[in-house]
Length: 215
Image 1 (tube, rainbow, N blue to C red):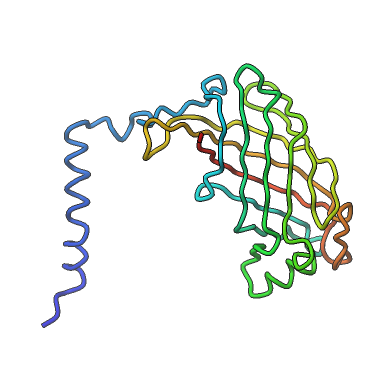
Image 2 (image 1 turned 90 degrees about the horizontal axis):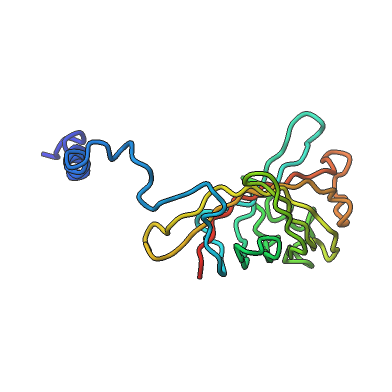
């Protein structure tokens, strides 16, 4: 006779429940304590050095008006970035980033077609950005201006940047990590993207979330 599904599930999660109970018994306030890795939302606590993107904890999302009635949201699945940071000269930070145009994900089977039609991915496989100026603003905010190259065309673009936090790496207590949010709006026609311009809007909002590890 096969064991009941409920009993199998209970046995499977019993060790996890026991571990959680043990940890809570040792320190009942653990669930309410600040992160053990010492995260800080104060940009002054961010260590200097060379940082590389943790691609498992990052996203590149774009949003564009569709038929004048809704915002169509897409994402890219392949990208990379790095930057150098000196706490004494934050304005000298230099950021480099790249996105694989062919990794466009529209949550449908025509994603590759859209990558070619809207982004010319077959001829221009890489979208790149190199910062030229970083301007600290109030609190944890600032702007980052640089050259965005899309479909072989390079134009200046300014991102609004927010420092989210910095701390120690989860699996490497000696490592340091930092996270940012960045957003900008571009006109795709400025880069030669005019496909379905009677249906799809010209302005594209780009939203980036990135967690970086110091290396």
